[in-house]
Length: 328
Image 1: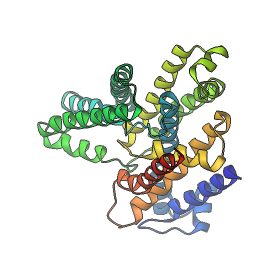
Image 2: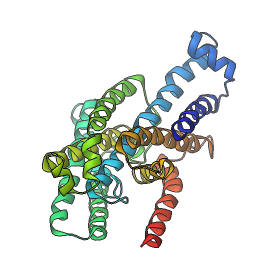
Image 3: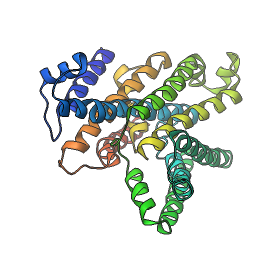
Image 4: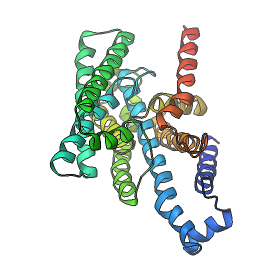
């Protein structure tokens, strides 16, 4: 039932995203343009060059961000863990900002591969620091605070770099750093879908080890799981998901925490074989809904995507914390 509801919500929000905007297009025209590839040339270009790539990118990156949060929560055995809260997105943002300024100054442009590589390196740097702190700090609340501090440090470095960057570079960097799915092309969609798709399959293959690890490290070892290698795989896969999102859409908050929690509560199970695809689909629906809200709430003015995800996601996190406190 949950999968049916998510699938129906996905189709409904796709239709709303295509139909809604400064130029309204009827359902009949949408059907003709998408499936028959005929109709008004202006509306044809609006759908195929602007709205469809943006919608699909929101779906792919939303699912990736949700799975990144799920993997981090599995790794730290903490439902509050997420790429934004732990400073991983901020680390990726810092390295991407440095890379963008360097490449724009030297070469005048940069590729998707360059941005994703930079974001991956930044994610690993932040994650590596958190892992070092994890050895020294046993209390998860203190580790969470350490992750937040890492995020502040990375943001401070990014702001420092932006202060001394050229005006033309700042314009490009500012728009990206606020978080947005606008300006996406089919090349971006293809690259992101391929990378996220491969990483999703690898994550799905880890379903059984994840299920064993959720019951404790000792149990996982007794089931033949190489815990050290498994933990490295979790971090790498989570970093790839987070890096892909940050590289294309900038840092996006709370999706990686709120969506996995809502999905687990809806399914009433923690079995990875069920939770992993549901989390991806739930993240896609959540981000497409937030993107639609960002576009249309104060149209023609467009909100930053992180503003909307925080508005919807933060209350979920607060509710989750209160519920855990009552459970104790």
